[in-house]
Image (tube, rainbow, N blue to C red; front, side, top):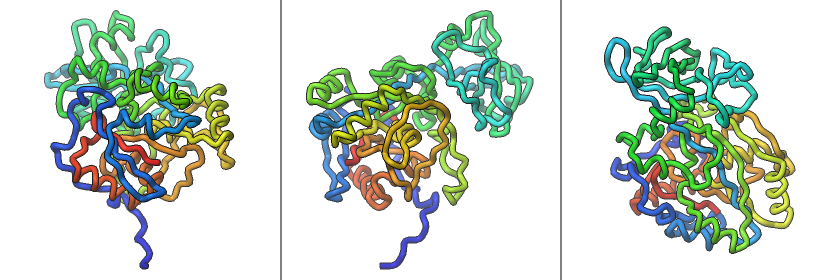
Length: 370
């Protein structure tokens, strides 16, 4: 058999009929479809997401990402006229200053627990019109000033308002729906673009594999004898950016902040020692756990910014099974799934999902890779 050519970014491209992009969530969270990919049998099964209870064995552990999306999108008008928008990314404080290059993140967490700061790093649109010194009027009592342009094209901005920053953002901010959902955020998105277990604010995108879980489904898993642990990884806007370099190794991987506590690391290690499997709910959990696991397979507590780029050839050390949605072409998320399931099997699974008309992306259906 001839050797396979090295995988390039184009290897992760695929054609998706536009009508398979889910623009709204399913009527019920756990009624989404579930494509089960069994690596040991090299087979597919078509199930409903609520069937996940039958797939996770007693003694296994399900790991959730408890990050919470905040209303980061501010829509307004430029001083010279014309619509514009700002998507807030990371807060800037005296204890956590930011370098001119946004990839050089400070070590402290993006603390959104107490008072929110007035200065942030942000994405802006249209970028050509939002230069240093420009302002964007959001409301009578809120403007956004552009303080600086960072090397990666993001901006350092300041909220100009007499309101507290949290009040201003919560009053005027909108859910930052992904750009492929070509509609304005609606009231249902406040609830549905958030997992039922979201706790810690800091994400500009939802960890979408978790959107399918309900309190009743989690209760059923606990009753079955499945342990449930939680980590935090604040999802950044880099999750939507395609890889532009044809050689994935040349892609500057975005950083995201994570936290794994001592108690949760100990629970996961105990399950593995007893022969149970670690189920990662989403690529965010997979990336977090692989960032804190050593070569022996021991999961450690820790927090910080991870740039871990998982793609085919990577050896997983912590994750035994993965629940994930269907991802954008040429994305780092699709590369991670291909690393876990195998490139050919992932291609076949996506072909199967398209043929069976699964719904794709954030509000779409899911895969369980065993």
